[in-house]
Length: 163
Image 1: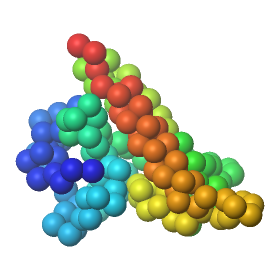
Image 2: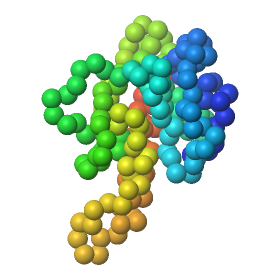
Image 3: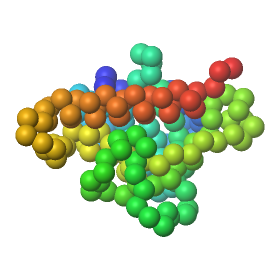
């Protein structure tokens, strides 16, 4: 991922009002992020724990979405829709996302199950379990990274309004 400035991040949100952009709390570790080791920048707001943010590069442009964590806990352990890690060391939560454009102004939303603190870039880079003799660990890891990028970008693309 290409490095982002505070200005880039605030300007990137496609489903947030000007007020929401201005008031959002940026991640505390913004200056120390290893941009090459992440596929998107995702964080939860420490002052509003139900609020989440994801910024990624979509068609060469920084594009961000504002997410709201659902109140209801699933009865069984869910799987993250983005990294699809079956050996998750973290929780998965339901997030609703207001669509961009006119649909969002009408109140249309979409929901997804994502790692609760947006740990997907770390999860897909963990060494996968060797499935069989001759298993190409590096190729499997790269495939997981590619799938995460594809799924996260596809989700954000679906949020973006067409008007």
